[in-house]
Length: 496
Image (cartoon, rainbow, N blue to C red):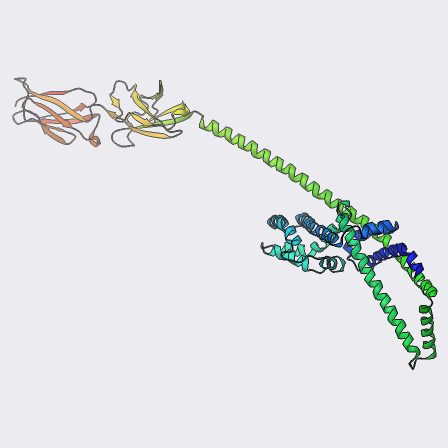
């Protein structure tokens, strides 16, 4: 026992080294080999009592447990970020990737608080230890996270991808977090967990050895029926157990063999950890590359959008403030297909303090070009001119001009709407009353002074009309007369 007390630092180093054996033989999930390598690097450099006290006694266990819990929750959050980046590299549909990205960001906002406050799931040391130590991690944590995603209607491809990759990513991120000096308390807590496991295993071995001693002692006093050879082997075993030096030699041989195996496993772990570090570094570089490309793409998109907006505003400004063309189509008093001024006359628009003039073409249209945009939609006055003396006029001389539109206007001719005149006797020269006058199918008679006025409806108006004049005792008269102008018709009837 004295020798054992003197070698306490060495035994602690041996226990810590044995933790690597636990890692190497598969008690810890292979994805945590990077954790084992970090521990191996420290254990193989040797322990001192001061260092042991600092690592395993300096912090209160509750504080260490909380530190490893915080690191584990942070590892879950970082693992979800890696899951998002890895899922973006798959061949799944773009809308599924977009949905997965949105769900991950949403869950990351409240998941840490939910896990740390244990509102939905108890995340204690035993739960974390089971997740990290098992070859196939206990899936309560992963099932809880998947349940949170299910509440958002997660797609089947992402659900399958999450179940396949989430445990390994959590373990990978947890191992990387242990290497960070900022997580020293979590690292100490994790080593304490490993040492406690090893201590329990050694205690079980010691209890088993004590049981064997007791059972062998009992065999001395019983008639067992063993053969002489078996009894001899049992005696040798009892002798070895009773001889502490011999027992220590045997244990030493076994320990040396275990150390050689541990050294081999440690070298392999260091190699795997180096490869894992390279994989994580590559993943981080890839993520940074994608983020940088996204920033470039966003800059290009915003620049193009800005250019398009400026171009649109410029075009809109030019369109709104651009001079325009408007057309006035002239039709006559008969109907819209009647064009008495085809190729004849001009139309004049009054635009503020200036006028615009356009000739009437053979289609009966006057086209005005270069109208200032300020007159678009405004009402202006219009009149007709250059009609070779014929008294054409617009009954409505105000029109509303529109940009790039055709406005139809009716034109009339003075004198077509009525015929007035006087019928006289050829001998006396006085006006004849009761003379029958017929124009455009409308009949009237003269008054006592021989005067008459006949109103002609617009549908019967013509530039020339046929007039019939008759009175009993006088020779009837029929002739075609022009209607335009303000002239007064005068005629003389001869007696029979």
